[in-house]
Length: 156
Image 1 (cartoon, rainbow, N blue to C red):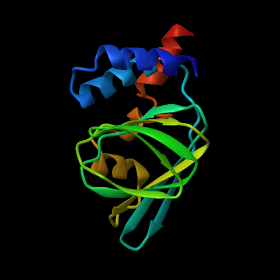
Image 2 (tube, one colour; image 1 turned 30 degrees about the horizontal axis):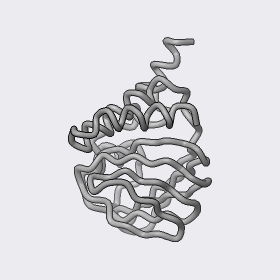
Image 3 (cartoon, one colour; image 1 turned 90 degrees about the vertical axis):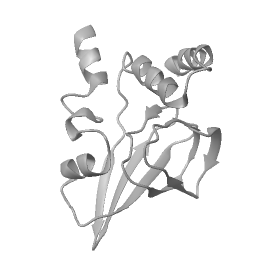
Image 4 (spheres, rainbow, N blue to C red; image 1 turned 60 degrees about the vertical axis):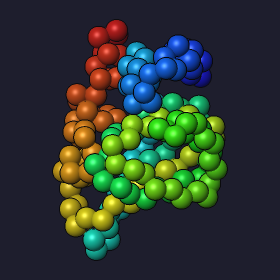
């Protein structure tokens, strides 16, 4: 992916900065590139919500900041994750705990399926974004206030 090499260079230049700042810089650089379609599905069970995202190979993505600790499962594919603890490669099947307050990014080394699990009785996906993350639904992938989509509309 053309943007990934440029992003890695940018990450090296900013190496001395805190991880969250480096991930935000990556996100700003990514906003200048076309958005990739990553279908999201929502699943509900009593007291449980699961948000599944399908990530095509070669896609670089930056996650939302979660307000609560939650479980995540990589059920298909391989990802290179950049977290507060550094960079790690994971392959399905893989389960991990996502800590609150982290802003992480990933590169899909293969087509991947990632699912976060949250304890809640809420079933409105837009409300869940605001309850569980520091984002708003309109700002996320496909939303009308998504910075990446806005930047690409301005270019076009």
